[in-house]
Length: 332
Image (cartoon, rainbow, N blue to C red; front, side, top):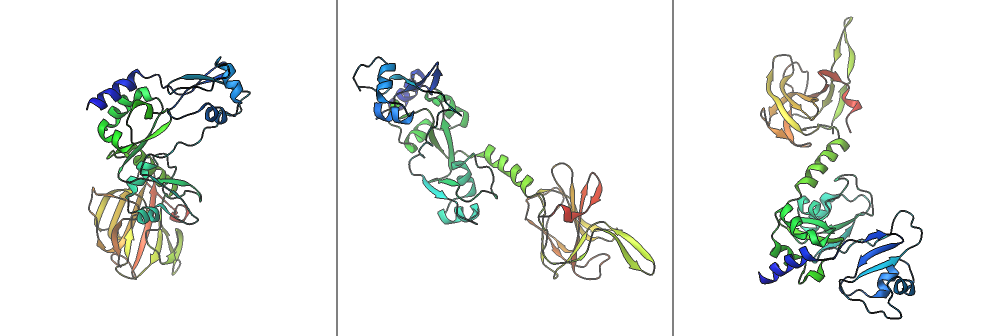
């Protein structure tokens, strides 16, 4: 505890600030173990130029905590910095062609939440390009960037993280181990905001998936019933064997689950974000109840031939603004 109190107090009083620009210079704070040559190389300037800018004469002596002026020429797009190293115990994985995140979590024996916590800025769960580098964590938790070491205490308080646990997980033994821009692992902290954001991204990317795969036997629109009669078919029909699972085409809340008196037989209706609804008719068995939240791909019923039906199939409708639309325009 004495060390932790010293650590937090030192951090709050520390001058280890993020690099800032002053005129034609970058103001940087020397980190533990850094040399003048390394700093000059990072900013692509001569060592002599750094010495001259800091009135160092011919000396190369610098100490952790020293603030140096590093001159730079015309910068296009900002100063290039190397990606920060991952926290201790992390591994790296490069996504290969055709590889999905579900395969990555299975390979390393972690959960999707753990993977998201280690990579909270992921752009998608389903459409990442080949070559993306992922950090593989040793356990559940959240990786955050420490932009300013003086704000460490506030950062830990914001996430409800324990200082001693974080110090051990990141190998922090003194204030000089803290660096602006470093990645910190907060064990046990759930990446709730990232998971919620990625869930919204997934819903936008995968608007509606096929609720069942089979032979398309009837399309949306007016159809001829013979004998000079016709009607308007408000959905599509997909033939499949009795008992075949029907899945939710999109995440939502069940608004109806039961027998319909309008010829649909056993019917499930799911309301989605924005008010759209998907309808699943002629089921032999319903697996959900009204008010239940369902995820995209979750089983909600089984194929049947109830109601006005001539064989086992799914009658599938999409309603937007209270009006049925052609599902084929939305399904992926």
